[in-house]
Length: 364
Image (cartoon, rainbow, N blue to C red):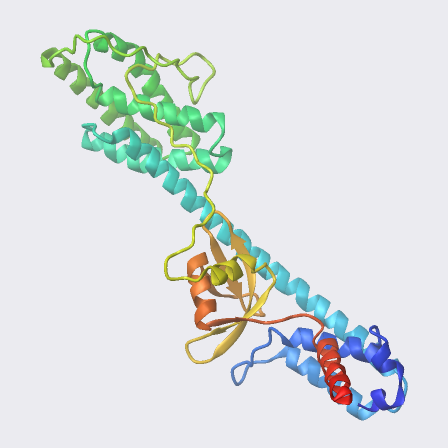
């Protein structure tokens, strides 16, 4: 107030040191929440120090405010770098978790697509859903869903399942099995060695697989033969673990689970389109206020994890406060559990509002 009375440029200069300091203080306070008794609050202490120096030291001019602005800016830069580091670690952890969930889902879907309608021996099925699933996840995470190695892994999965249940049986099934099984066993062993699976457990998997193959040949002796001409075999894919040509792929259904483009999110029944739009418009770095168990807390959108559609919110210290999916966030915005906070030039907007009101009253 003293500066405004002594310096006419206070109202005219947007870059006036006092206005800039007030804006910086207001901006810093957006994400502030009161600490529990007994805990230090560095931001509050710094702001009290700034206010105290103004009350004690200001006489005239703007030199004090320029000094305080520089000092407070340095304090906030250090605080911002610390928070960014914490938030980056959180984002990395959340994105890693999302990739792991996606890999687990795709590996599960791939195996389920192959075993559906098949009579798989229990030891082989256990191997598919434990070490082999781990290998599929490893390929997705290391090479990606669209990689050649993932296509090869899916091909091996199909041939592995077919080798223990070669339906439908034809008059060439036995010959085809004799040609395919050695390559299947070698591919499985190399895959488990590639992910450093326990050697003794790997030997158990291979032994169970070989026993299942022996059982298949015994069943072929009495199995009725389908005289219908089999479908032409697919072109064999290269071995997942070596460059030599793989054994022919025969009746196995090589159904590769491939990612499809995600459709635009459709409006959810019961949620107004305007609130879904507000959720979509929320940007990383935006501050909100949400209702906690005991009181309202201020937090920032630190990350949007596209793979899972999660919005991750953190407090001013960078600690995770809450996570929402799109529909849940829209519902929270609509119900008032979450409200947006404006982090613009707060003092300048307040000053403009006062001036507009004065002009309006003068016209009246």
